[in-house]
Image 1: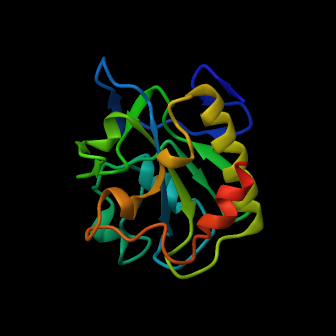
Image 2: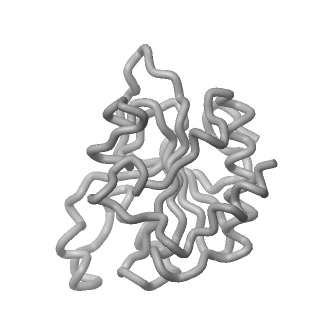
Length: 179
C-alpha cells in the first residue's frame, strides 16, 4: 500500500538526491536495476549510504571511485526481501541517467526506479521476487499508466551503457507474479 507517495511496509530512509518531476509528467514507467556494494558483495548498509551521499570512501577501494556520485532510486529490495524507500514516488529519483523509452528521453522524468540488491549473473532470491511483486502491484494500482508493457530493465532504456538487472533476473517469473 502507498500512502502519501511512500510504501507503508517499507523502511523509509530519505535522501536529498532527488528533484521535482516536470509539471506535465505522468508516472508511467517502472525501471528495474541491480546494485551491489562493494561489487558482487551483499549485505550491510553501503547501498543505503551511497544513495544518501554518506558513503565513506575509506571503507573500500571501490568506494573511492563512486562516493561523490549523486544518484538514487525510489526503492531498494535487499536479498532478504526488505524494502527500503529513499525517494517519494511523486519526486524524480536519479536512477536512469541518459535514457530513452519508446523515443522519449529522460526516463527519470516519468519513471520509478527499483534497485534489486544483486548482480547481473547471480540469481535473485525468492524473498526479492515476492517483495518486488508486492511493490509492483501497489505501484500499478496507484499509477495506472504503469502496466506490464511499461516495466523494463535499465538495459532496455540505456542499451550499450547498462546491463542491469542482468541475465540472472527471471523476467518470465516476475511477469507471472503480476498476473
